[in-house]
Image (cartoon, rainbow, N blue to C red; front, side, top):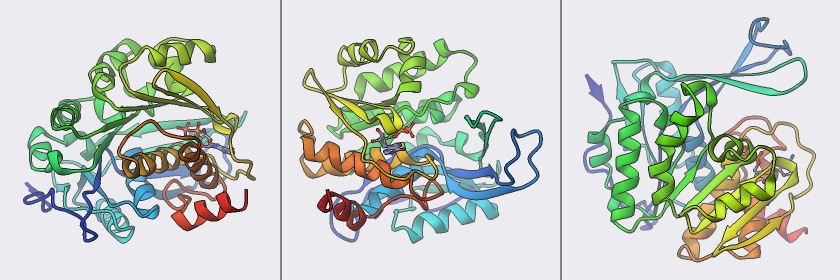
Length: 329
Ligand code: ADP
C-alpha cells in the first residue's frame, strides 16, 4: 500500500517557472556524534535529513530556483520528517511517495582514527522508486533532471532512474549526473561503471569528485588523465571537483581550473551538493550554454560556504549569502 500524491505532478511552481527535478534517495544521515573513532565504538549519533539528490533540491530552492523531488520514503517518523523538511525548504514534494512496504533509508557517517570520512548506506524505501513513479512525474515539462549513482545500485530504482534519464533526454530536458559513488553499495566497480554508463551517455552535465573519477574512470590519482577521460565522454559540460583544491571544468573541449574560495571549513558534508545545485542554477538561467567564469565562481562559492556550517542540508547557502561573498571578493 502506498500513499503520497504523485497524480497530476509535473505542474509549474508557484513562480510559474518549471522546477528542476532531483531524482533518487532522500534519507536520514546518522552521524557519529561522540567523537568515537569508528562505528564500532560509536555511542551517540546526530540525525539529519540528507541524500545527495534531496540536498541538491534544497540547494536549488535556497538559491531561488524552483525544485522538486522524486523518490520514496517509508510511512514512518523519519519519512514524515524528510517530507516536512523538504516542503519547509520550498521543494515541491508532490512526487515524494510514501510506502508501507519499507522503512525510510538510513546512512551512517563516521570518521576513522586518521580522520578520514566513511559512509554506510542502508537502502530501504528509496530503492522502491519505480517506473510508474517516473511515468507520473511529468518529466518532459521540468527544467532539468538531476540524478546520482546511489539509486542505480539496485532494482527497481536503477531502471526507474535510467528511464527518467531516457525520458528527459528524449524530451530535450537537460540531465545532470552527479555521481557521488558509494563503493560499498556495489559488488565491484565494473558493476557500477556498467550501470552509470547509460546515464553518462545521456547527460548534459557530468559532475565527478576525484574519488568518483578514480572509481568510474580507472585513472588512479592522475588528474590530467581524469580530465582527458572526461573530455572524451559524451556530456557537453563536465566538472571534476577536489575539495579545497578547487574544480576543473571541461566545456566544449576546453579545460579550466577554478580555485576554491578560501574559507574556514568546519565540515565538508554537502559541499559537492551545494556546488552542483549552484552550477545547475546558473546553467538553467543561461539556457545550458557553456558556463562562463562567473558561473564557475558562483558554484565554487556555494560549495565553500557549505563547508562552513555543519550538516548537509542545514549548511547549504542562500542566494544572498553567495552574492554577498562574491561582492566581497
Ligand atoms: P564532493 O562533496 O562531491 O566530494 P568536493 O568536496 O570536491 O565535492 O567539493 C565541491 C566544491 O566545493 C569544490 O570544488 C570547491 O569549489 C568547494 N569546496 C569543497 N571543500 C572546500 C573547502 N574546504 N574550502 C573551499 N572550498 C571547498
